[in-house]
Amino acid sequence: MFIINLTYIVPLDELDQHMTAHVKYLKKYYKKNVFLASGRKVPRTGGIILALANTTAEVEKIIQEDPFYRYELAEFDITEFLTSQYHPELEVLLKN
Image (cartoon, rainbow, N blue to C red; front, side, top):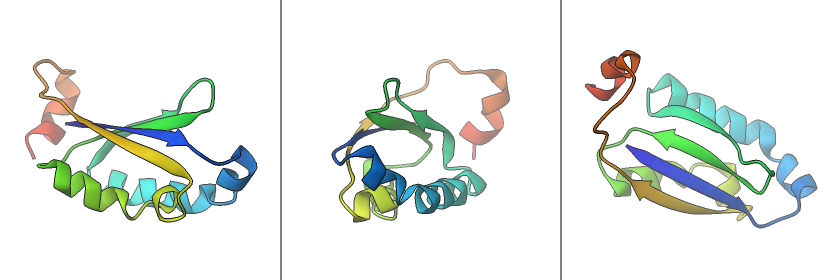
C-alpha cells in the first residue's frame, strides 16, 4: 500500500481551476480499485491519497496522469508501507 502526499506549490485559486479534472482522475482510479481514500489536508496545504499498487514505479506512472502533477501545481511524495493490520472490509481489495 502507498501513501501519496501532495503539497500544493501554487495559490489555491490556480489549483482550483484544475479541481474538476483532478476529481475525474481520482474517480478513474477508484473505479480500478487502486485508490482507497483521498482528501485535503487541514489546513488546506495539500492532500493525501491511499493507493494499492505493486510497485513504486506503478504509483509514479499513475501520478503522472494527475492534472496537479502535469501542470506542476503540487509536489508528490510516495511512502510505501506493508499492511500488517487492516479493517476486515478491506480484505477483498487487498487480496486482488
